[in-house]
Length: 351
Figure 1 (cartoon, rainbow, N blue to C red):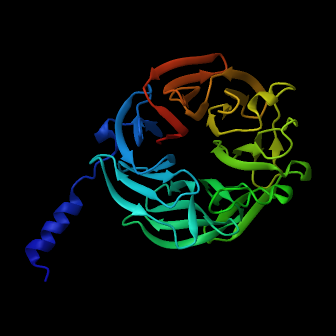
Figure 2 (spheres, rainbow, N blue to C red; figure 1 turned 90 degrees about the vertical axis):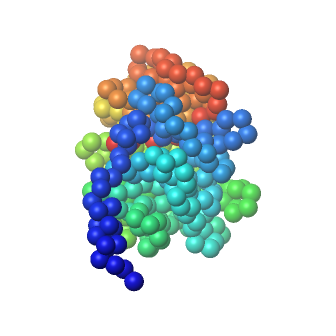
Figure 3 (cartoon, rainbow, N blue to C red; figure 1 turned 30 degrees about the vertical axis):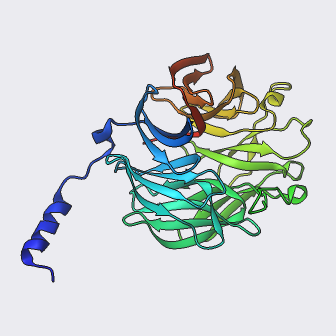
């Protein structure tokens, strides 16, 4: 039975100020890494210094940062069945999420702006139909789900009108990840409204339906930049960056002849910084920078580069598989830090 003293003590605890990201050194980014035989989630300063490193049970992919509390959800490399909730202040796991039976997480998730809800990218293992999982961020109970609008969703971002999803269009074997429908792919961008309905959807031209839409970055005026991975003839040079404003058709942004081929058909990550957009290719060992309108600016060479995020001030912060963190701009690259580890695919900016 709850006593008056116990009830008042509970109210006192609730009234205490909750710790924020500033209380653990104000990290600017989260990034997964392999170090030795283990896997870790790092919190990084704006200058690329590691402020903390917390263990993961297996290889990580992306992470979702709570907007206020020092709390992160680290997602397994797709397709995975764990999402680890980590209290970054205490340095420990507080919950482990699992999708419903027959589902798999697909590498990405995001919190609502007020931090009350977590949205996760998921697939039905058999057939790869997309789902958006909805979780109460107070106790991480699953409270619902929506259809993603396509097959193989990967990245997702929140907009004023709902959740925009990168549906890659690929059906994969749930056991060995073989791609089963390359000849009939239909990737799309889907805007899912806050009631779970499909508000709008954009597809690529018929000749580019093997350009799998994978990752997203948002502009300040409601634009969506998207990065793609080409599943067609490797000899073809196709755009790997596109722009979409809901209500309009997507606009593709090719690199100049010869430059596009250096990406080897693979854009691994994307970021928007001010008036510029960057995409990376670990396969090609290059990053490319474009204007916010999609005009090509520069190619920067760096072996196994993949993670990319807006840098504080201007330009981009990038990571590579050799443990380097770099500042990129259309003027080139500057190495900030070097560690004895291998950074994974993504850098997630806080704030």
